[in-house]
Length: 124
Image 1: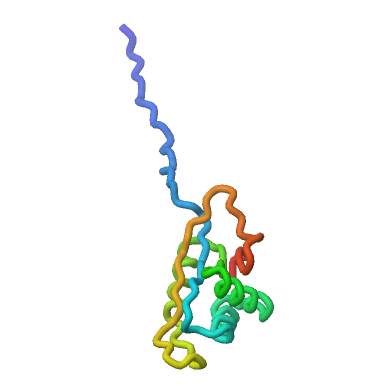
Image 2: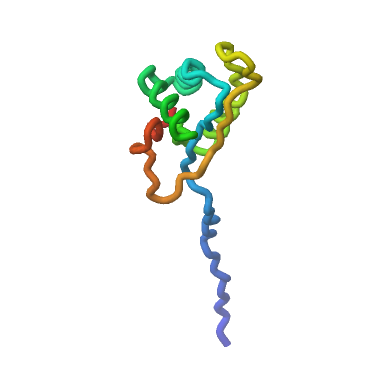
């Protein structure tokens, strides 16, 4: 009789695969209740964008209805979206009752925002 005992082999645990993207876009949405100056000031204060980039984002959101402000990881994107929502009304626009709207969107695969007007860019 063979007295050799075999131990069960343990398999290394596979990391759970997530379908969630690593990068997210912060997208500013247009409305008719905020001035270019407001958008530019917000982009400079919240995202530290230079004046030229802030102006380009204001133009893009006005002409296309939306503009990418930043591409970053999800938690940072959520923070920036919430900061946009909390930025307050435009003091230069009579009748403005609140801040602008923004959403976050996943960046899938080879999506590259560097060629979008006012979009893409480095993590701030």
